[in-house]
Image (cartoon, rainbow, N blue to C red):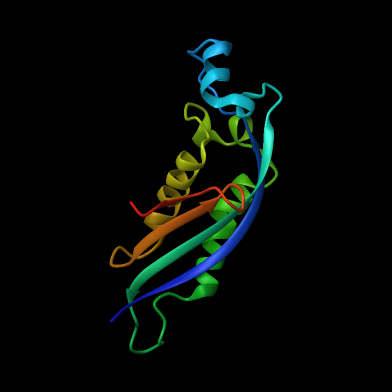
Length: 135
């Protein structure tokens, strides 16, 4: 019997959506106000879900304290109160769109969670705009 468990987290970060190989005008046309050269920020909400079989000994799919600690160490500490473009090496050559942020988070967590478990990352950039990635 496969069950999905989820942990919600939060971080605040600034970013700018742009491509350095494009002109300012093209960046502005594609990314609009998100191309602000002085950056802008979001209060991101993150939900990480792990799906797997219930362990017969513990009754857990995954110990939620372990999941909480993984998210804190590898996501919140890496991204919270940071400028994603300038302070986070994962985005040195990657546009920090919500889609790319979700994939980066998934890639950070995937090696840390048993391979027989499926993981999904849902990232809310705003209460109405969110992305999901599950590998």
